[in-house]
Image: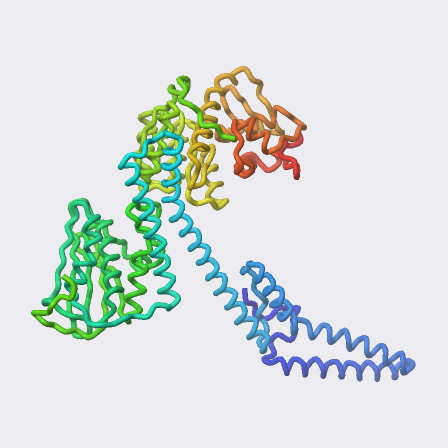
Length: 350
Length: 236
């Protein structure tokens, strides 16, 4: 894309705009003088020689000045295109002067805007897909009820309720994520009992687990951590829910909190199919799903892990996933914070 | 505009296979179609959908585009490879690309989620009516548009002597235009004549099928008459 210098831009190799202008002016004056002098020597009228000199000088200036200001016009055109939503335009950034520098940073900016725009489109496509599916189910069942194809028995109503709950969860998660990403959310860090938080966090996942066993462990013993309890509750709940969803029907999910010198480590281990190493970094992206085609009916929209990552990073910690032998995966969230190990810690909520 | 049909004895001969992983949607579609008098089976993922299609030999398939196991597009392709069967595709994505890919692999019609059940049963009825009608077509003559020949008895299409695969809808659309050389047909007329029903989103359906036909047979086969509709390409 970038050429050393375009042949139609003779002054591109010069390093500054000032130098370019000097060259143009010097060339114009020199040409004028030479042509005028030659004109007089071959016996032309002074006024005719003057006009001729001016015309030749004008031509030389036109050739030399080519490409000095054209990047500015290109940028103006590209800006107009961007305002209309077209981020594909780039400007010729072959010159080495100040305008060339501007053109290069302009191109970088255009690239970044194009990337942002692409991500926004993806997000809209994903959100609309996630919203469409439960709405389609609701519309299908409701239309059947209205037309008398199905009767409004308890089972049908429960199906519809589940779809409405799924929509509600999705909207809640999207709001959470947008609040987290915009930084509008402040942490409320206070000491809390980790064991009772874990118990509460897995309650939801347990009620939906159908055959999957969830074990909660706290090592080395009950301890208190200074962090935002509500938000960490969300992290553990999302990790546990994700683990349950990918577990075999009779699998075991282990939810463990380990007190360390600098804070706490939360681990969730499942016996599911695991995640290929190449995809390990992507699982915490919004709307990532292990099986791209699977919009799971349990509400796995691919937002839970993205939320977990944001909350962990807001605490200054990090979150990662690794394989767990012989099969399954292990999600680890490390949260820095003051730890207080007290064997007889009184749980705040029982 | 779209009446809810009462169950009719005549349609009970038809069987429909619903391939959809969202249980509530699959159940609702099945209930609706059973109420219309069809035999309905459900498959919840790609591989079992292909297997069920082979085993049951349905007259029509309602297929979700996003399926676990194998992608809906591939399911459609595999089903069509064995035996041409009308496919009504359901999709939660509605970019032009997705739709074109669907029509490319042989879907006859598509609906975007969320969709109306009444419209779904109208489209199913229309697609099945076409299966019936194709039996009456045995005696119709072979028609041509330029180098393209359309044989209604075998439902075979050749372009300069080479066979080209068209879906049943694409075939009917081409044949209809070819049978009226030099005349322009509006999108609305095409919906009535080819699809057998009239829907608000229908004009877009016609456009997508025309695009797909042009990709398979060449742009000159179907001529756009701006502001009016389509016509068979001028004999070239």
